[in-house]
Image (cartoon, rainbow, N blue to C red; front, side):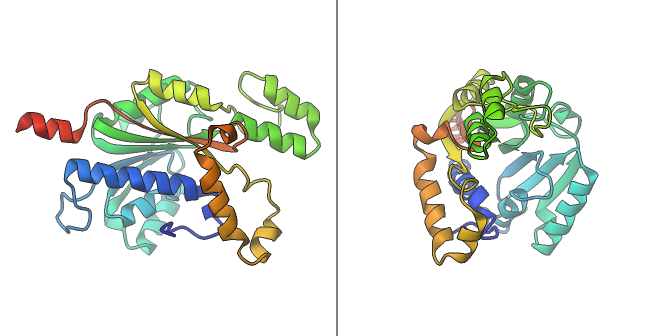
Length: 270
C-alpha cells in the first residue's frame, strides 16, 4: 500500500493517510501545482497544528509539499527536525513553537492549502475557537483534516476491560471522560465533531471511523498470525466509511474544505 509509515503503526494511521493523500492530490489538481516539478513554487503549503515529531508532516513533505508544523513541545520539534533530515525533506519541513489558540502569533492567516488538526481539539480549552483558527489559516477551497478522540470507542474499551462503572461515567459525562485518571480531557461523537467543523465554516465532505477494531485486537495476534495485519487493515478501511461503526471508533476523522475553489478562482480570473 502507499502508506510510507511503518506497517504496525499503519493500523492507527492508514485510513487517515489514504483520505488525506487523496485530498492533497485533488488540491494539487485544482491549484495546478506540481509537487514533482522541481520548481521552488511547486507543491502545496500545508500546516500541521500539533504535528509533534512529524508522523504526518514528514510523509506529506515526501509527496513534495511544504509543511509547517506548529507544536508547543520543543522536544517534539527537535525530533521533527531530526526525522525530516533523515527522510531527506529538511528543506520542506519547518517547525515552530506554538499552539492552535495562538496560531497567528507564529503563522499567517489564509496562507495554506491544507491544515492538519490531529489530536488537538481534545486538549484545548475552547475547541470552537481552535477550529475557527484552523479554518482562518486556509486559502479559499483549502482542505482541513480533523482527527479527534471518539466517545464510543472509549466507552467500549472500558466496558471490555471490565470497568463498567467507568464506561457508564464516560457515556454520561459531557466531556466523555471515564474518571479523574482519564488522560484525555475531551472526546467527541461524529455529530459533535461535524458540527464544530460546520460552525467554523467548513463544508464537510467525509467522516471516517478510525481504529474501529485495531485497539480491540490483541497485538500478538496481529504480529504473529500470517496475513493478519493486511487483513485487519482492509477491514478497518471497509468499516471506516460506514456510519454504523463511527459510534465505536477510537478516533473520528472529518475531512472538510472552505468555500470557494482554486478552480473557480482561476475561471473567474479568466
